Structures are given as structure tokens and as C-alpha cells.
Image (cartoon, rainbow, N blue to C red; front, side, top):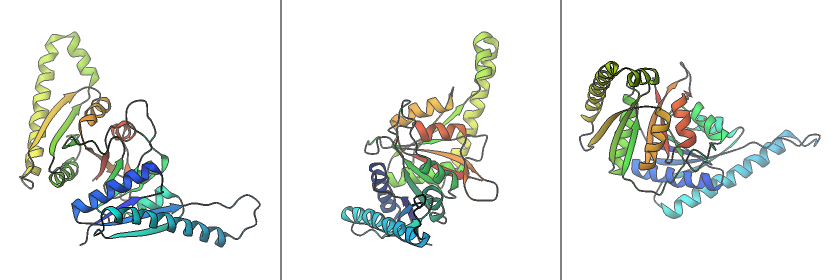
Amino acid sequence: MSSTVVVGYDQTPHSDVALAEAAREAVMRGAALNVVTAFLRPLPPGSGAPVEDSQDAARKAAEAVAQHGVDRVLRRHPSLAVRPFALVGPAGKLVAQAAHGADLLVVGSRGKGGFSDLQLGSTAMRAVAGACCPVLVVRGETEADHSRVMAAVDIDEPCEPVLEFAFLEASRREARLTVVHVWDEPWIIGYGQQDPGIADDIALIEREREDRLSAIIASVRRRHPEVQPFHQVATGSAGRLLVEASQRADVLVTGARRHGEGHGMQIGPVSHTLLHYSACPVAVVPLS
């Protein structure tokens, strides 16, 4: 089966960055790249213009933008298989639908990272929420080279898909892999500070989680012996610790549960924080 990367493109600066990252992913994967543009052009109130004319104009505008994206990619990657797709309708929903069956969907974000920039666009969030394949939200300093992929896992959830994606990404990039599990239980940590006797219990829980994390990583690593992972169990606010860690990574991989039997993902609070504040691109992998 052929591999495909899909990118949502609207000819804005943040989507130009996403387009470049999508082309890089397609080259690394030996995949084709689909450049998808979706335009929604409602009729002006009282215009009396035929709906067909409005849709035709929107489609032609989308075709021009999608072709512009294809031309940009081919100037840098002339041998890459790149195809334009023009759709008429709500961008987030249609881009997610266009990625059904793809290996990866790439979308851009207006945010620059950091706690002062809560700027993930609604189109990007709708695309993530509606996608059934991994989604790479491109934000932060994509040109920074830390040679590090970071995976954020919850060992109380099925996290092997996150690790599989992260191992493959590290292998393709020839980068180091850091796997982080954050144990976020502020109530027991607070008790431990008040009662030294509880500190031993906390240490026992942390060792047990360290052992579980090591076992999960070992099971995935057998399929990717070329990757040498480092892992750690941290304690505190998962969102804040992972955002801080994203400053030292080229991409941060996390997971989100699927919407029942349908398509799309449920974006939890930690993933939501990363999508808005991460200093590097965030890959969201659907979980069973």
C-alpha cells in the first residue's frame, strides 16, 4: 500500500511552514504529498447570486491556492509526487476527511509557542479533532535542530501507538528519543511534603511506574533496535513540564483517544495544552 502525507494549505505564512514540514515528512517516508485547500465562500446577504456561481468561484480560488502550494514544494523537492486537491466547505472538517487513509495529516498553527501565545487556530483544532490518522500540528521553531524526538506517554492508557510513532520518527530523523511519563498526583505529593512517612510510599509508586514504563518501551524497542531511547518518570503538572521539555525537542509526540467507533479524536487537557503552548511541532496519535 502506498504511503501518503496530507497537508492543509491556505497560502498564509503559518501554512507555508506546515507545507515545508509536510514535504520533509513525505520525503523521509518515501510518501506522496497531497496539498489540500478548502474554501468556504458564503453568498453576500441579498446578493441574489446563484449558489452554483459562488461554489464555482470558491473552487477555482481553492484550486489556485493548492497549485501554488504544489509549485512551492516542487521547487525544493522536484522528484516528490505532489498533488493538489481543492474542496469547498469548512476547512477543518474537509481537511480531516481528506486525510482518511493517509499516514499523516499536517496542519499549521498561528502560535509561536510559550505561555503568552494561545493561538492555535480553530481550523487546526477541528482538523485534529476530526482526523483518524496521526496529525502533526506545526508550531514553534521548526528549523531548530535538537536531534531529539520526545514522546509523552500515559502508562495508564494504551500508549504503544504513541511509542511506535515516536520510534519511527526518531529513526527517520536519525535523532535521539526521549520518553517521558509525568505522574500528576498533586494531592499525594502535598501529603508527602507534610508527612515524611508518606515520602517512602511516593518513592515506591515512582519506582513501580519506572518499571512499567521500562517494560512498555522494551516491547516496542525490539522492533526498532536502531533507536536508543532514554526515559524518565517526572512528578508535577504534566502540561507545564511537557511544554518546558518541548523547548529541547524537534517534535513532541502525544496521544488522544478515538471518538467511539467513529472518526476523530478526543483532545484531553494535556494534549490541549501542548497544542496551544508547545515550543515545537506536536504529533497527536490516535489511541484505541
